[in-house]
Length: 292
Image (cartoon, rainbow, N blue to C red; front, side):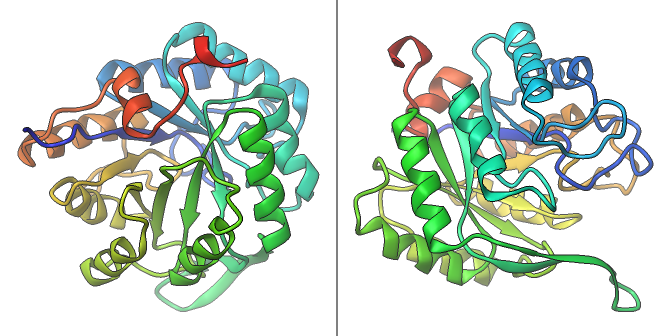
């Protein structure tokens, strides 16, 4: 029996990456749809979306903008799996974060697993440039998981440190998740753990035996974490949300160019790249024609 196929996800914008850092970061619905199509054409099965205000580029909970953006992606990219963020951005209320999931019913959504100090900093000097408390209480986790289960949305449990895994394993005992679960280990976000192979290995040991998992590395961790996941049975997230550059240090022409890199990594690891339909099986996502 061959190795399980590798799922590539592309996080197109995030909450903080701006066009000033890389002009390919999408703001408008048309830009999101175009970049989603490029990523899908190169081999991505999933796009992760923080919707932006087309005028300012700031992340937004505005439901009209969210509807238009998600609709544009769905129209341009039939079959592509949309994974919506429940973080959205700083200053968004708890209900504003989950309401778009109820309204849009994406196939996947992020489920953040613990509160943390989040910040932007100058890594050379240690100077904190901006910060906020990223609030994710147990009550929020339970509520969000309930909404996702009701609307047949697959949670992607976002783990920023070991505490997040233990939090999920605790509330899992309530039976609030459809099994098997899916986890994403995020490395390098200030406030969480940086990437190294030992952190990844220990996190994997803590996951339920039947869980699927992927990695997200911030900045240059994108490449080292992705390569390690590829040879150890995990899946890869790339995209301008996490890193604006390519391994050679040059600005990426778009998230699609990092998808091209991930396809090559999969090949070197002896794994085929999963299609969207194959990803639905790997991550146990209901097909849309089976959804109520």
